Image (cartoon, rainbow, N blue to C red):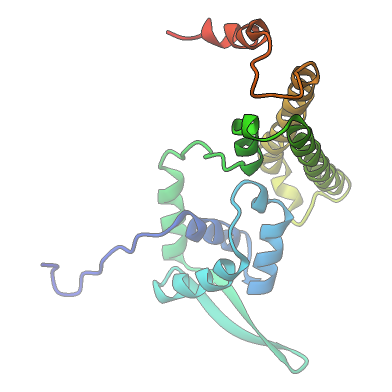
Amino acid sequence: MLPIGASVKVKLTTTSYVILGLLALRPWPTYELARQMRRSIRYYWPRAESNIYEEPKKLVAHGLATATHEYSGRRRRTVYAITDDGRRRLAEWLDEPGRLPLVEFEGLLKVLFAEHGSKDQLVASLAALREQAAAVRADHAALARDLVETGGPFPDRLHVNALVFGFMWEQAEALRRWLDWAEAEIAGWPDDIATPPDAEAARASMRAAAGEAP
């Protein structure tokens, strides 16, 4: 039983901490928070926009943020700001180790079960992935250009943003390199891809990794 006057420390989600981190930079109306999430965070922490609109309300309810109402003409907007308690919770979260990414990649699942379809289907799947990857890479390049030319919304954070951008760019480049390799691999496969091709090429691609095994 809790002592009188004691409060339960509410458990926050990672998305809660993302919003707290953004609020630590400056106060935001909700639609600007959602726009900032779309700018780059969606590439490594994708969440439904409806969650972004609800999360600040939860932070206010727990005393970690405040909400004030402003008017722009006749339109009312709610502006959220972080509280001292919110800053303390954000600092505590930063002190905890983060988890590695969990990959959710539908295109790779289609490659995994490709022998149940045709070679043409596999080729088309990889081509579609390449098109999507090119679009992501172009988005990253546009973001980099903006950061170089303007520094982005927070120019004094460019050194931190560069660390995160480096991961985004390397991930896009890794996907491009994998697509180059996979397309070259299947080029010599028979039309009936359920019939195993020469397995030596497959073994060769795994030997380097096998050499790293304990």
